Length: 246
Length: 204
Image (cartoon, rainbow over all chains, first blue to last red; front, side, top):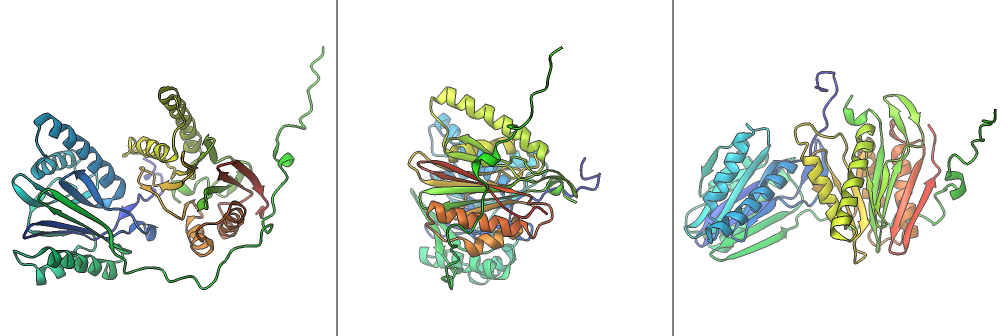
């Protein structure tokens, strides 16, 4: 509506992003960078893109940040209720189905591109979910603006039966490829290792972009900023009473 | 021109040692015309939590009234005052409810929780929370404020030092933005109380 009248609509925060997932011998590893952008500006230098879905399931989110946050929260809530209803640990396919059916309903207008991973009674599973509701089931995946940089690392090095340390190192290298080569990704590397019955959430596993110590302090002398005395801020004190006598 | 630039504003919140500060300019404009130099954009939610609303002025007023009602209801039901982080999630939820027809404000929340821990955050128009450990900025002068804060801010500033830092960050940022300025107000929130000051700036 307002867009027709020539007004530019405000930009929502996006996670430009590099997110990845890979399956290794005993489970899976998820990885993400930590930069959130609003247009060309970095809005958050250390945001969390690996979202909790269930005790055995986490989801990386790229795209419109509010959409990934609220969508994963909603499905997490639905999964908890589902788990109580069934009396069982939730399955990754359940989360995948809930996510895709929600996103398809909105025809891509909910801009959430997700890497969903978890370890349930049927083993480790890794999916990608696209904003329009399509899904892929793969042994290694990348999403976001830095996905090409990250995929180049996976395509050259992934093979079945990797060890935990090899998997984590590969995820770290893939995210760093995105951080350094993609403008929409940056800051730190978050990693999440999911195995049978255990999750290791490694927040800021790598910090390759720490700020150097500032050269000097820019603290001001106290009293530099002038301000008005409180009495001057009171309004309406000097409006004269109107004479309403007949 | 963007909707967010129609009325013009500049707002910043910073974390200090056991205190937070939130500051905003006071201009209300209609494109190039300045209509008021006394427009309130930062509102108390509780004794220890303030909300700042940069963006379209009509939505600033509407949202503040809606927040007031929701916080009063919360207080009646919970029989306690709302914590800043809880309030921020309340705001976020209210914004996302309007996902495909949003309010044109990017709210920021600043406050001390029940253990006097500082909390600040800012949201985009659809409620994505960015809770920073150092500072948050908003309004038409946000790019300028990013530059000022990134340079001037340091951790563990005492209330009096935090006042100087946040004031100078705001004053110098708005001087490079045509749509904000014309007076500014700063609130310093400490465990002992809130100090509110109207700071002297350029009126052009």
